[in-house]
Length: 105
Image (cartoon, rainbow, N blue to C red; front, side, top):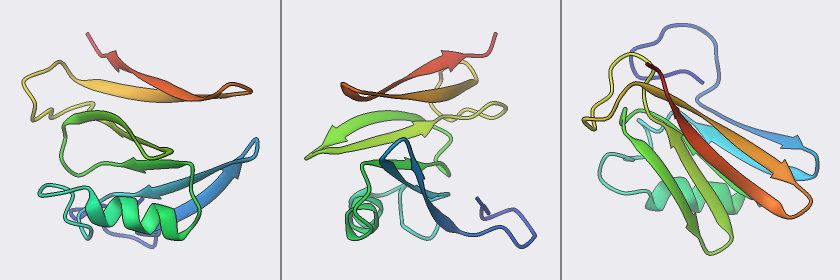
């Protein structure tokens, strides 16, 4: 995803389908994610997504709102939440979607 400080031709949002799970991805700077996740959730739902992935805040987030799994991996180099640098992964299985954050130490 193309972030607010990035240059290039990468998309600002993208939808992919993995194992029957639709994933909406956006950096988040154009969606006001520092103030609210409302627009992110709305866009993800408009596309029929099961998962919404975003960044921009450099803060970890893991939530589940009305059937939508929402995840921000945090930041691998400049965390803004007083937690260690991190990344995250999602697990798509027959029982649903889950995920976790991993500290980079």
